Image 1 (cartoon, rainbow, N blue to C red):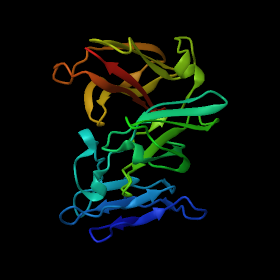
Image 2 (image 1 turned 60 degrees about the horizontal axis):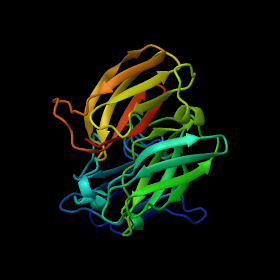
Image 3 (image 1 turned 90 degrees about the horizontal axis):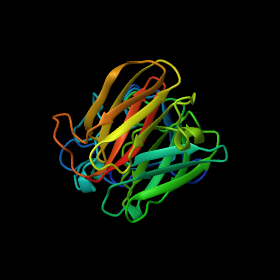
Image 4 (image 1 turned 90 degrees about the vertical axis):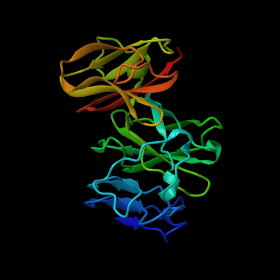
Amino acid sequence: MYSFLDPARDSRIGGAAPGQGNVIAFNRGDAVAVNSSAGQGPTGVTVSRNAIYGNGELGINLATGFTGYPATVTLNDLGDVDTGPNNLQNFPVLTSAVDNGITTTVTGNIEMPAPASATIELFTNGTLDPSGFGEGESFAASTTPSATGNFMAILPAGLAGKHLTATATDAAGNTSEFSAGILVASKTTAVDPTGGSPSRWIEVRPNPAQAEASVRFNLPGPELASLAVFDVRGRKVQTLAPRHPFASGLHEIRWHGDDERGDMVPPGVYFLRLDGAAGLVVRKVLLTR
């Protein structure tokens, strides 16, 4: 376990050069904890290209207290203007991951003041962390977002069924916590979802949606799962289906563009998350009103 307090500014764990990456595994607590005992806390703590897995708490924990236990994910804020350890750097949001048998294409976005100066690192994982956010078992690739925060990375094939996570590091070296994990789908999952398909998929129609959308998902076998809507800051907007046993086959649930209280949400990008025993599937929906 690596733990950084207020004096530990401009530090680094891992790196791109051969031999710089570390294996940080099987700790009872966080793998990397960047904490503040008082005030701002350390900044410029870069966590890059390490193998982080099998830890009892979070892979990376940016905590605003002396200790971060029990560990909780620090959710993104609008514009990434909050302060704290590593300036509470926003994590990326992975929107799709598809293995077509030749390559694996990953897309996502990051909300921060200067996204084009950030580095996104992607990691593969055999299983999803119980938090749903990270860890990062094997470094897979790095990429740079556009000025609008969108990014795409091309990874090797053979990743279908694995979970991807990501971190963002700004120009000053502040690394985020791990993103929510996303299950890598096969090409048929994302391109041609049909009720007769044996694969596990989710789709949204229409998309963009003006007022409401139909959310269809297919489960190849019985599964304990939930379905929820999240905003770009990673906050849950609406629980469409609480965690309960689903039968195998095709299911359809409508989202009326509202939150838990029944109030209409503003236009923008939202994410449908099917979270089950077999993993996490995320689909993006644009609500236009």
